[in-house]
Structures are given as C-alpha cells and as structure tokens.
Image (cartoon, rainbow, N blue to C red; front, side, top):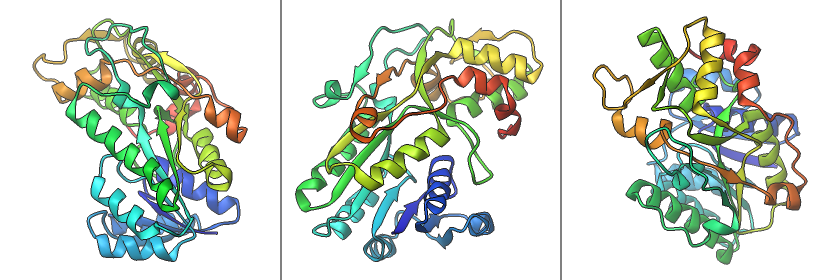
Length: 305
C-alpha cells in the first residue's frame, strides 16, 4: 500500500513509518522542518514538507494514498476534519493517534486507584477543556466509520524507547531529563507515587501495522504494555545519569523548568489504562514491559538529553 503518515519525523510517526517501510509499504511522510527530510529519505520514506493547517495539501495527499496514519498532533481538530472529509466514501483506513492523558487523575504526585478500560471511556466526560477537546476529536474519528472510512483511534499511554528518526523522544521522560540536567538532580512531583501506563515505541509500531492490516472500522484501542510510578522512573533516571537520589518538588516552586500546569496535570497525574482489544482482536503481543528496565539500560543513553 501507499501510506501517508503525518508527523513522520516524530517519535511515533517516524517509528511507525519506518516499520511500515520494513513491511513492504511505500510511505510518504509529512514534516514541518525541511532539515529532517534527509533522515526520512535514509529510511526509505518520501518526505513532504508542510503543515496540518494546509487543508488543500493535506486532503490531496490523503486522497492519493491507500491509507492515512495521523501521528502529528492528537489535538488538531482541523486536520482530522480535513482527513475525514478527504477519505469519506473510500473505505480507506484512517489511523488516528490519541493519548491517554485525557483520563488523567490527580495533580499532586499521589497514587490513584482509578484504572480505565476501553469500554469505560465510551461515555467519559473529562473535567478539563483540553482533555474534553481530545475526546471529541477521537469520537469524530470513530464516527467516520459511518462515512465508509475504516477509522481507528490508537490511544497511546506514555511512550518510551528510541525513535527511528533522530530527535525528540518521550515527552514526559524527556521533561524529567531536561529538568535533571538543569537542576543537577532528578525531580518528581510530590511523592512521585503517581502512575502512568506505558508502551515501548517498537511495540506501538507493531500495533499500528496490525491495525492498518485488519482493524475493524470505528475501533478504539488503549495502547499499553505495563505501568510504572514517576518515583520509580525518577530513581532509574538518577542511576542512569549518575545523579543523587531524586527529590520531590512542588510544581509551583521558583525556578521550575516545567510549566506549572504541565507539571501538575501530566507529571503529577495518574493515567492508568488497560487495553484488551489490541490483544484480543488483532493478536498484538508486545515484547517490552518495563520502562524502568529501558531507562536503566542502553535505551536511555541513546535518548535526547
């Protein structure tokens, strides 16, 4: 198939695109930064420079392709509307990348016992406008099945691992690393007992390939293969970086490298999900199950500081 991938220079989009190339597909990758074109070409991906705001180009590239993977921005409603309209009536696959932050609970680094399965979020009403907007976009994608689009939402948990295109890696882990280099010590919000489900990017890419091949239309998947507390991740980071034991931090304290809202609602929250559908419907069998083992091993040394 000829597959159009948005966000092809990112951790998710680049790794998925490379995985699809290895499976024998032809891939066109949308990127914003022309300087990344060479890296994509080296992987066999045809780079196209553009933005999600260019609706005409986005629609043209989508119609030209046999399938579309949207991995650029989970929260760009305009791009999703353009892609759905372009593919309506075609029966082509549209894989949309979402994120499990919309079920996040807590802000202070304390553990939550709330765990969300795929059925539980069908009527979920988030308590934050940004999260509510993401849920609305996911539902827009799923509803495209009624317009003869084989639409799929892959709702990823915390993604870790080394991307195939050099550049930014895991958003949340990179935030901890940048803070550690800035402050000389790894920090976690509060006691660091808050937990996020997680998934290795290579396992995630395998799931995208499976979903492209055989997922039913209108299907939502949580993508996870384990979970860990931020305290445990911070401790593993401290060991890998040769730094002292991590320390708690109030997100509103002076000198915070993180935006206080990001620190509280992302780094200080819980996002615990369970994804049975990918395993039951598609036969997905992830190989990696411990973000702490990855941090402690060779993976972190390859990650961007």
